[in-house]
Image (tube, rainbow, N blue to C red):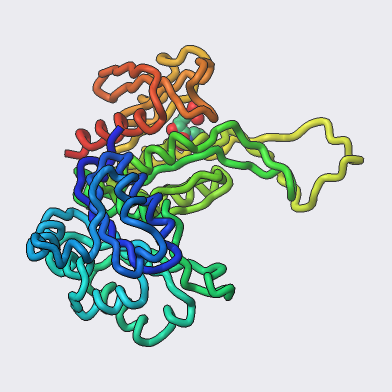
Length: 404
Ligand code: C5P
């Protein structure tokens, strides 16, 4: 498994905030993903965390200002700056933010940033009052205008005991931002890819719904893979507890009808639609606005069919040409390939991902999937059992080929 972070050179700057402990997780995760992580600690950072912590996590030397004034000091910052493909500063104090904004170069970290030409991700961390201060706000504005990606700070409990906006965001968010930024020049750059995920919910009454066992995992994995390839991702999602990829536009829906609206709205100019959602085929004909009382003892529920989203998309695509490519899913418990083939043709898809939900370790809820890909031109590709993220990578690689 690889992602845009793999094999990239990332400088991680750590400054003097209690949130420095979160930087350990960032260094660790980026290293596990195969990045070459060069850590630079400011003097202040070393009061909270040691170079040895980072050396242990990255397997590489961690730099401090001692290296700036050492015999090789005159080339260290230039070397680190030049080789960096991304610089992440987390946590970034008010002091470092202002230094960066005005180009002050009095320590190894800020010198390295000046010597670098790569994108910069900054996660500020400080007391809420310090973040609100006009001096800090001016620095933030200057950095944002220069194209720096600022993540956070978040609202929450601060080291001072006060509640306010100043907390560094969680490590996972910084990592996701770095991954997103490094993926931006991928093969799907400037392509709009709309992906649906999860199982829709059709109301019976004020509290009850008809839904299905779809977890949304395959759809979210597709959204991440498309984002990794640089796509502008729109994720139209039924309720799940999953975390969408950083930078994606997320549209939350519940019912098939809401999903239809969102899909039609988003695909009129899209390069691709991937319908991974398990859309309800039936819904209660007359959902009750109040909770139905137990005493009612209802014995039947009248259902009607929901709109078929892919059919509506096919009809519009035939007229307008958008979305350019359409990929559907077929979750079947019997006659998998025959059913998938018929859906591929009926819904006028470019490709369908056929999913045998009766197989173990495949389909709903689990992290793995076993699928067969069927193409409009008659090609069939059976994939072995693999992780849903790997299935997503394969599907996205086919989408890249279809769009190029
Ligand atoms: O016909 P069936 O529901 O089995 O087809 C599955 C494919 O059609 C999936 O891609 C699913 O997202 C999509 N679908 C749809 N609208 C529906 C039901 C399913 O677009 N109402």
